[in-house]
Image (cartoon, rainbow, N blue to C red; front, side):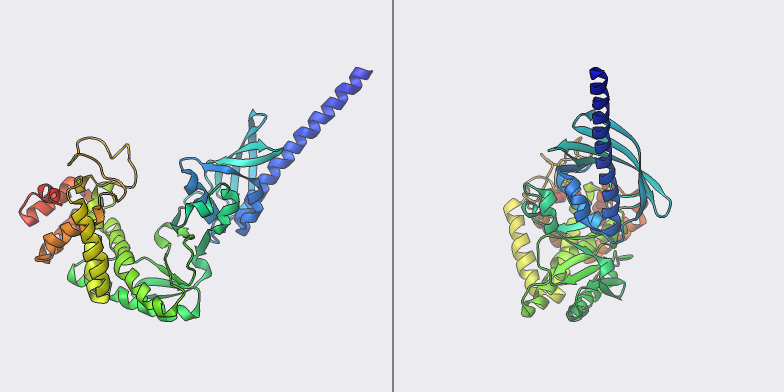
Length: 412
């Protein structure tokens, strides 16, 4: 009789523990849904492990995208998350296989891996946190130590998320500028005046077929830890104005003349001229720098002198011929693209070879005396854009310039 009582007690205890485990992960799944639906990170925060990582995404990007997605008011809302099955890898590791059921009736699998630590389950791995047919892209400027550090779960709240759905806006000549204060309207007008000059430069002088017209958000938030969120290319570039009103116009004009004009031009080369492949990096960034320089001559001569003819020229002189510009890649090695024969002795990463300055000087020295050649090259690229590759681009340029462009580039 005593053994029977012990057995029954053990069964009850095991049942209670199992039920407690179940109640715990059901709560996590429900809070995951509610955090997304209410754009409230604090709901899911207690359930996150500091080692959270999404599949096919690095550690920092996981936190950046996850936090941004939760705070994005345009994210797709859920009716329910249905737990289909569970798998205990060990006493401390549990995998939840679930189905996200959205309010528009679409469904998507959700796989969460939970880690048990200090008697609590925490999410430490997720396959994906965005729905079908949705691309969340972030444009970010942040200090990793401040938002990640030793506890990203706690520190991520230092990241300011700008959601354009929450701001007023005005549209002029195809550009939409968002603003978080009525006091910014005069700066919106200034942005638009600069964009008109850029449009004229690209469409009239260089005969661009169209322009990739990015959005902008002008704000007084000066934190470095800013991220703008949204779908695809709809995300605005943030222009964070200085605290001093007297400096705002100067700062804004400088940024439009250098950074933002470069991004608009490069986006156009990617979208309109089909130059997205990493092997076109030297062309995209070099031409974008050169045309931004041409804009700065019109709207901000000081930047033309200091930013381009001093900084970029200095980079060029310091790093001349340090690796071949045709071997300029992204920020880190890519196993797919970085194979085969090189044009020079090495692939180039980051900006420690002064690539921007070298590519800028290539375009400036090559075309400043005969820009009609550049117009012709752009026209030819557009005609061939469906079949564009690096060999075809080099052929187009060599024919127009009547020289071997590969050899010409090696001089820079």
